[in-house]
Length: 105
Image (cartoon, rainbow, N blue to C red):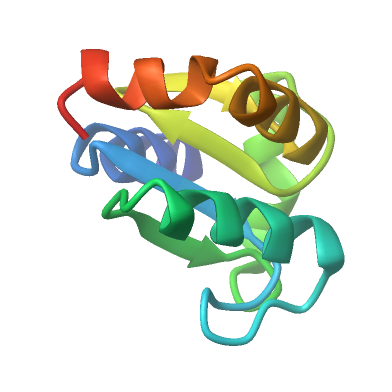
């Protein structure tokens, strides 16, 4: 478990914005992942992603690492923002744009 947690920490540390999602930004495999990608693109945010359908270890251990049970998971500057519902809510309240601006994303 330490090895996979280290891998997750490296991904989160080495990317200002990272989305753990089902599928890819070009071809999301779930509606929730698609919604978050759409919001990121609308906000013109550059982001890395990990397809949790292709990385079983990440899919199994990220919820333990983050203490967040579902996907997608959006991380900004090493901080978990949340899943789809939270991202949508923050976007509607213009708080997400403020988070991106504050973190120079």
